[in-house]
Image (tube, rainbow, N blue to C red; front, top):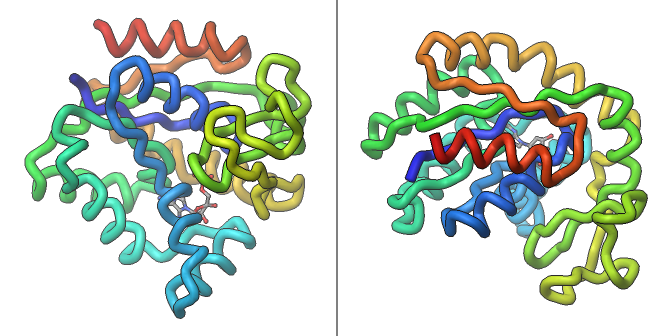
Length: 217
Ligand code: AMP
């Protein structure tokens, strides 16, 4: 199985696609955002720092993120492949990721960029809800993607919440950071001949279909 990296702007449906890949191929979905949201619940200096940073939409310090990523990728369940999302977020992190992969003896696999319009993202960001237990993603404004019962996760019964950074102001900040930082990352993986684009302006299933073809090739 290939390792898969997903790159997309906030609210492009990356988490949803990762969940679908996880289910079909039985490989873990590793999201630095999820890992950091878990750390942010801790009542410690680190937890407080991460909580404040997430709410502002800024990036968490590199040394903290690298340690968490390396620790997670070193677990046994990643040996058969994994989906990484939210990392790397800038060129320095891409170089650091190359080093982490060398250290643990993995290769980058395939890198998939989901291309999507900004207007679509703004609409989605307002309706996104996440399960505080299993991290499943819903959208209360999308008929095919809303939970059966408001505020309750269909899969595990967990409580659905709105992320502190899912508001238009934090979105603008995160979107601008994404555009500014990802062009160098994309170039980096283009040069390694591992980069592919999919069109994100279509249904969840159509996006998945494009991704699935890339995984199978
Ligand atoms: P995400 O769920 O990927 O949108 O990430 C949510 C937040 O987690 C970001 O706005 C950052 O504050 C933090 N974060 C996630 N991934 C990284 C990363 N690779 N480096 C630094 N901070 C990150």
